[in-house]
Amino acid sequence: MRIIFLDIDGVLNHWDGIQKHGMDYIGDAQVAQLARVVDATDARFVLTSTWRLEDKNITLVREAMAKHSIDEMLIDFTSNLGYTKRAAEIRKWIFDNRHHIEKFAILDDDDEIIGDQGFNDQFFHTDGTKGLTKEIADKMIDYFLQQ
Image (spheres, rainbow, N blue to C red):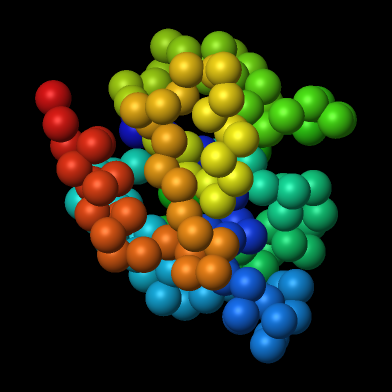
């Protein structure tokens, strides 16, 4: 299985959109780029964002994804390990599911995620002022389709 560890803020939205529309904003253009990645690679999502901690936010994410027919690709959430860094939560999910993972990518606007965790090749860094762009989506597609 191909897995995308997915953040929301700064990935499926951008700061101008949040300021204009509020904290519940998810950008359709960014979700469309994510749908392109799914269509090309058959990847699944594991939500890493703090949005995973509230049911209403999970519903908003699924609704935004449903507009592009990718809501069923959201298969899981990383564990909430409290004040632990997101990279440790991702590492735990990978360890717990290692037998099912063919390849994974991390899509996040926070570059601290790579740190000393060895996620350099799998990390796709978005700019929080733009979110997921066509260029980053293209790089993810290329990454997943490499043998």
